[in-house]
Length: 202
Image (cartoon, rainbow, N blue to C red):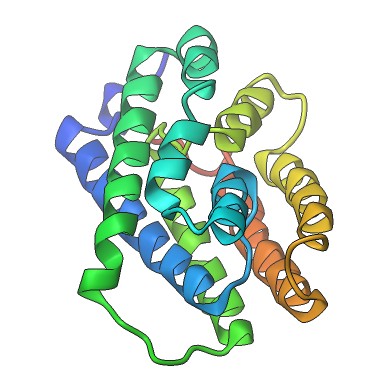
């Protein structure tokens, strides 16, 4: 039986979602300005935005729609609701971000390292409060909960596959920087998202 004192309160979940989305949206803005790639469904949305010129936010929201059913069936209503809120906020924040911050220059390596850290910490905040940014995050958490594989391992494999696809769209050096960012991001999740160490529940 889980000690009730370990459960997150609703306001704690809401604050974690806001903080996680804020960190992630800033990291994605770094990636977008540097024209490099993140992994998971966010990476797919960025890649489509680079090819089409469409905004990241709407693409990201649409790409995640097919995963809500898996989230609901496998992870429950609360997880699905928090994930939907996180995805919706990230889509909005990404559309508003250019009006909040403007960078005349950002080195791709800095964007990869610091952006990767920001996104990794944002995802970690959501994971700790039983939420996600949809897509591959949902699949990774589901498989980890079933003790099939660690979430960080799953995401890393999928991210590598996405980087290979990016070779057909981005210059080689941008893909290399993207790989650095993916390693940093997934290392943060892999090292810190350990259910046996963190017992907080939502």
